[in-house]
Length: 322
Image (cartoon, rainbow, N blue to C red; front, side, top):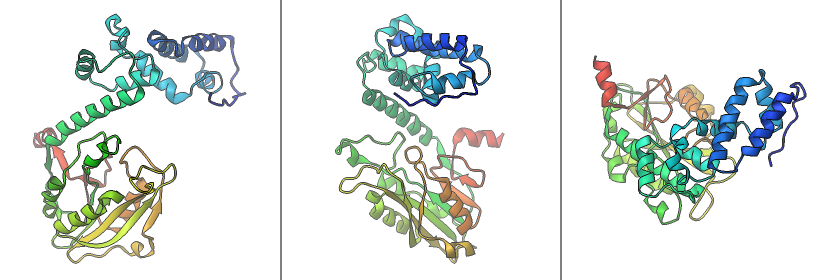
């Protein structure tokens, strides 16, 4: 059970005690109990005085704030309340929360083909959600088109095709992947500034180092150095050694030099992990300090006002034209 910290500044009122008793009674009892827990949390949040709800979660309940938000989201999902689904749903709050991420169409399809069932495990639902994310991302990628422009700095985080991971029994990423042929066919030179030259940063994992070097050379750039992200424990999976690093190939095309600040920068940095494939903000700070704008980014996952997304959907192009 999670260790609680008593918040002495918030009084433990009789009303709060009543909510605690109801919520714990419903917790983990069944699908209905999980839905009831979320509903009770929502009602308690509306009734309790300011700060008392947070104090109740921190001090009185067998779960924390993150789980509380998940339970409330589960109770707000109308399809879980339908009687025809009750016996088919797993009586596990984490699985139910993951199912909220599916579209209504995908949820109905997975109910119909028997994928969603009461004995689902967390690994089963994670796979379903991941495949749905991949399907949606593949549809998104199909609508992307290169944006015009010239850039002095380019950043690419290739969606490497992890075809070998299925053999190793590991889950593939939850996004559309790019084959070596697709990456080699990418016309990166269309964004190169011929007047000033362009600097290129390409992310790679340890497994794809050789392919990343091939990719940089194929795009017409000259490899200059390697920057390494040192990650904190727990370390990632590895076929031979446990991966604790990720790398960025730095290359140039044309007559271009880095900013003065780069001369004092080491070729490694330490930063915490984020979501899968998410790159640390400290890397972008390094790029800003070492290279010149304008900055362009391929496979952009997090919008940044000073990094132009090199690919836009046709719908965005249409809106811009109007």
